[in-house]
Length: 272
Image: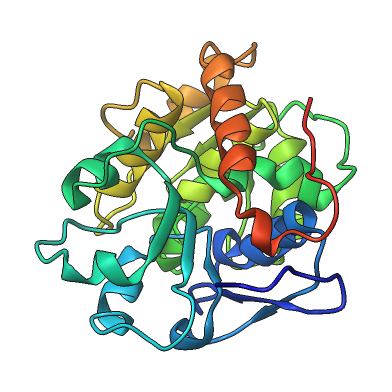
């Protein structure tokens, strides 16, 4: 059994180590929701897994239980299908990113959400929205010369490097009229700020995590646009209210409801 948390105790969080704003955003979100300082640790030392496709990490490191409390999963998702589920008994799953991952893992759950939807609360004030289209590649695509050339040719497009600090990346997304993203958390953060977005081809990345997230908020997401289709899309990209805003609100509420009370210091965070 866990002792009650105190503000002086850092919360031990694990996130993926690659330079990617969606992963590093996890610490800021968890600090905001928990009211505690957060330190990033290795998987076996973690109290909490949050933002990211980390189920495969948990499967690798918790094939056998560890002494003491089980690590908690809050809004975590799958990168690819997994076929062994014995490790799930060694985890404390409060809420998963989406219903696709829950179905594959055979976890009975009706509420879902990605904690990246709390980016506005974690980041704070952002610049006013400008008349531009942000292009957010997957971090593995930043060396693709086709993307750099496309953005350089079109003044309507603005390249956002997802390897940057989460504060800078979130501000760039929030201040755009539309976002075209191959980064999952480019789409998540755009949704969090109410900025319309389009899924861009993530090249060799698996599609499952995108569909899992979209299903969690009732967002239609069928096929990504090709990189060479982006310039033609830019002048007609939608800029109005999100038709699935109620789904985003439900996911945010579910995430707050399922955040582990034993990891929170003080009163629960509330959202509008």
